[in-house]
Image (tube, rainbow, N blue to C red; front, side, top):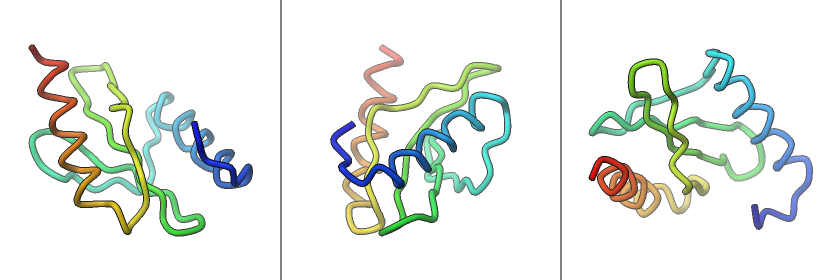
Length: 84
């Protein structure tokens, strides 16, 4: 992870850990089965994931509110590639 803000990185990892245990918290669907995990720290970080059955696939992209539209496109592309 290229994020230099250690507190933000900790907040993101904590949310991913809670997601792994089935406690996603603030999540918003963004279409095509992809959801946005919203982290209320700094500029509003986002991590995109897809749930398939009992499996959670974290799409290796994310960003903040400012890059949200581009990040959602990337997440959808990655999910499509994962399905192939």
